[in-house]
Amino acid sequence: MDAGSHESPGASTTAEEVLGDADLTGRTVVVTGASGGIGRETARAFANHGATVVLAARDEGKTARAATEIRAATGNGSVETLTLDLASQAGIRRAAAELLKRHESLSILVNNAGLMATPHLRTEDGIELQFGVCHVGHFLFTCLLAPALVKGAPSRVISYTSGGHRFSPVHFEDINFDHRAYDKWMAYGQAKTATALFSVELERRLSHKGVRAFSVHPGLVFGTDLARHLTRDDLKALSGITPKAVRPKTVEQGAATGVWAAVSSQLDGRGGLYLEDCGIAEINDVPEAETGYRAWAVDPMAAAALWEKTEELVGQRFL
Image 1: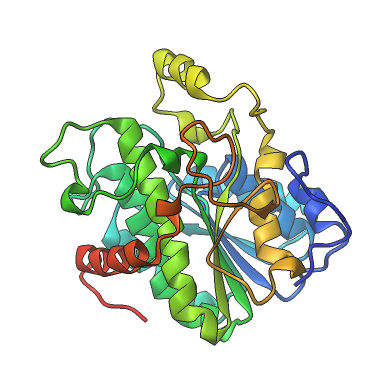
Image 2 (image 1 turned 90 degrees about the vertical axis):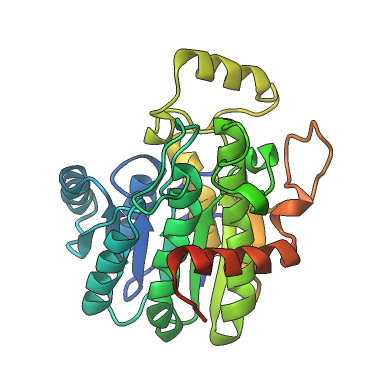
């Protein structure tokens, strides 16, 4: 895979600049949460470079409109939609089965959909909502699609984490907040830590079959549906805890690292990495750290334990 002609991508690079003159004809890409925001821009960028792109999202009408607009903007007729509700394991299984009927092989899966700082809600299957959607839903969807990813190898799975993973490791003894007071930011942090750990273990289990996995921090991006549950007080508090040196990104810039993870030749033969600003991040356990990631987000023992726990939550063993 090649990231096109942009030589030194960084924090201000856009998804389109990452791709440069890349030709993705013949590759099939699935993007979750693709009806808006970073997911939609990611799908548009891939479609603009010739890929067959599947927009997977919960809102059928919004997703259909996004697909129509992407076809018109790119001239690519191979832009599909898939109804995917990550808060329903039954719905995820239906979506995966439908996708596998259409495509026997996949080149790139971008697990972009997510929630942030929601009230204490649960998925259809009784799992705390943020953990259930951001981690468990994507875990199940990815594992069900694994045969197609193996067939399409070399392939890549990109899962969106966040700098918010610093708020909390995974609390295996009480993932659902059954025995501790619910804190929406700790729940968000736990979910995003789980996303990074999933990439670590997925890499260990599938890399020998040509499927590589990466977790991506997109940066601070405003104006997306991710913040739909935040109140004015939440936004004010978030601004207060965001380091002044961290500059907000546009949606186009926010999509860049995920696209880079999917196509960069610099990542050939590598995986299980935490990426940010179109580069490989480093461990940084300093409490006031503005970049990098906590060691708990890539701990291989925690990653293995999380995999086993998630298999229990979905009632199926994988890989």
